[in-house]
Image (cartoon, rainbow, N blue to C red; front, side, top):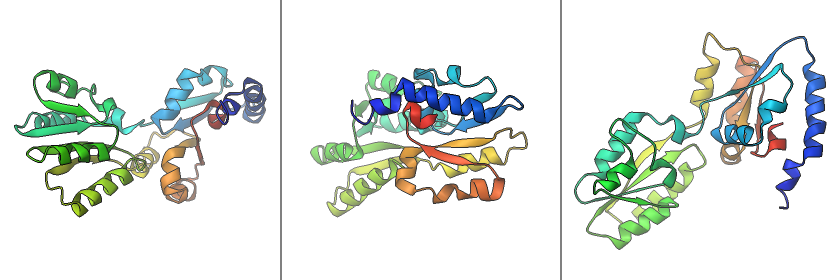
Length: 228
């Protein structure tokens, strides 16, 4: 596949790994944290941890918003979904995330009107098609998905769709990075930043990592060679 296979090229990967081994040497141990769960998925899928030098360790960071959402927020979502007259819409990856009272999928099985959508605009269409019901969209994600939620809310306002609302659980990437850096037990040599978030916000928000903490942060895509 053009523009993808090039970033999975085993010959190029071996060359990069040889360079990493040369730069790392053998005198000390290095730890780098990938911040995004998308990077973690690629690292596991392609076995990157197992081909790095023994003294170069990847530490898995806070992950995606789906992974780190508090259980109480899931319970709140279920409570909203089970409210009479509500159609609760959500991305599919939130359906099986457990809270203290089960999952949205289990709430659906109990009779709640929970619907899977591909985008907040799909949820808005559900509201337009069901003017007698309150439609709630479960908004999650980093800076990558927040703009689409905002655009949908603006459209709902402009089109005077009064039965549409958002249960917002968006988060931003900088606070968790700062919390990690402020830890007194910090033992990291650098960070791998999320490429998709950086496409939206740029690299400027991360400058404090090097300026204030003396740690490097490199943003990268999600293929093996990107990460290496």
